[in-house]
Image 1: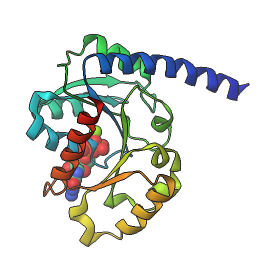
Image 2 (image 1 turned 90 degrees about the vertical axis):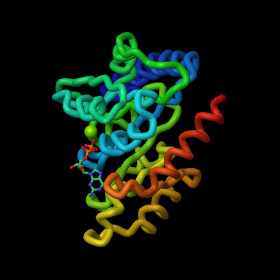
Image 3 (image 1 turned 60 degrees about the horizontal axis):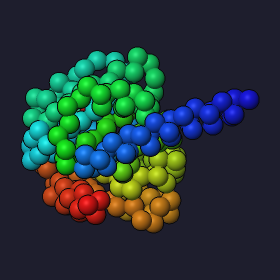
Length: 215
Ligand SMILES: Nc1nc2c(ncn2[C@@H]2O[C@H](COP(=O)(O)OP(=O)(O)O)[C@@H](O)[C@H]2O)c(=O)[nH]1
Ligand SMILES: [Mg+2]
């Protein structure tokens, strides 16, 4: 009974996600769904990207409570819209659809949906995005892909963030990469630091290539 209800909820979500995707494609947006545990650096990565993209970077940012991330992103130069879920641990396609009705988005630009900090539920809710991105920071352990395979199987790109902390933490990037490739041999892995800005050139090049491939 519970499983049947879950399948129904997922299929309603998928239908709205499909409508979101049609809208994204109509206006030429590249859309990323960014998923990680709290504190791995999602908002910080977007702040660094805003230094290059400015208002061409649109962010719908989800949190259980507060507008803090949207405030940070606007200050960094991006356009941001905050969704407060009031307790829910993931964003749904219909929450994003409601945000799209009021968030003024420039065609042919980039929209990043910063999901709620959680490695489990957000990975199973399609929002209509082109690409799922997993962020894992060096401070949180290299075993995340094997502990949370649902996300790392679906993510097309993994950002290993806070690489400036590598000298101080026991984090084996080779182990993490090998576990990611076992789950998804096409995954792209990027190493970033929001402190030194290392890795952002490769990351932004990848996004330009993906945008070009969408036409
Ligand atoms: N040392 C270091 N700290 C970082 C880096 N990226 C983010 N942080 C810090 O990690 C904390 C959480 O970052 P935040 O962007 O809010 O994470 P989010 O919850 O995933 O959005 C903040 O104190 C950031 O300053 C990084 O590359 N290196
Ligand atoms: Mg954040």
